[in-house]
Image 1 (cartoon, rainbow over the protein chains, first blue to last red):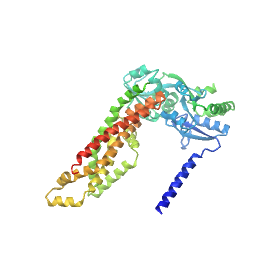
Image 2 (cartoon, each protein chain N blue to C red):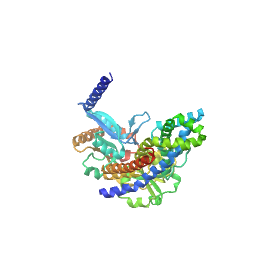
Image 3 (cartoon, chains in turn orange, blue):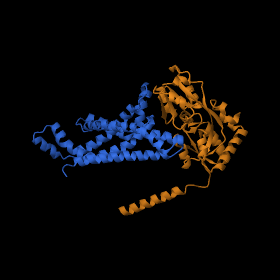
Image 4 (tube, rainbow over the protein chains, first blue to last red):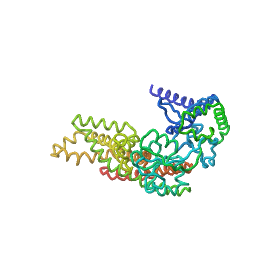
Length: 260
Length: 215
């Protein structure tokens, strides 16, 4: 009896494996890879569902194209590995277009947002310019363009810091700041703005760093998919849906390229 | 970035990985013994509370405990977050591993035949003497393989310190992987951990052999 059960179990397991292999059905599914902690572009809304500017645009674009829409929260510092592994079909959530991505062969959409890096500090910290950060501890999120900037173009500035620590989420960066383990956080402007608006006692320094642009990354060879999505977004801009969605996100509307 | 620079950079973080490892072993082994003794206490309240604490520590992810120890005081009481992350990291690791070690110790202690206690009593040993001179040496021999198991797991778990931004070897590897868009640092990290564990394994094997004085 035991043997029979064992054989039965094995058969069941083998079958389930086979089933895994054949789930790719014909209806086109589009999996959007997002950073689930990146307000206002992509985040978990009050109702527990993912939302945000990028999410809404992508959902509307998929509707236009007749794709089945799905969301996948990527691990931001491994986003491209996860894209390559087909866990998602694009990375689209406040993603800065970097030359290194182009060199690595990823297909990148036209930029849709202009971004800059800023420094957020506590209001009473007495820090007013980037120069005041000399000898201070600073946090940055791993895998963001801010980290990239500090390691390359702004490495002179980084060298004046006492210590630069990397966190794996924006929330942790801000927690370190709130808990006074660091004196400043180097972070994308829209994220800093929404945090400073929602929490008291923080200010953003006037200086902005690293003009950069957000785009959508696709796997190499997915030029057609990229064109299809870009086309659908262009249609959304034309019929006014894009502007309507953008109005819900006043923090970022000024920097949206398509609405200029 | 050449492979060699990568290895050198990551090796600088190895010091911190070792710090977590050795400090955790240093604190959790004795702490585990205290917890084991509390767990086996005749007082029902003491043993019940200890049992509950152990089940919480074993039943929640170490990563969560790390976050709780590091950021919990800030969120709950508005205290500052420690600048030196080694302190909360070692506290969280030691408490978590002590819970596992406690259960290993308990298993070892309870595996000793009751007759030995009776024989020791007849021979005039006090309770403490019986435990330290007769029971404990046997327990240590018996639990060595399980302890080695935990210690080997600890080497790999040190990588979790990343969640609270402690720049140990794996964190540096992640940073490099990110800036270079390369998978290589993960392979380097894998080799580092494997070699580290091979050394741990060898050392623990030696200790086990030393303890095998009756065979």
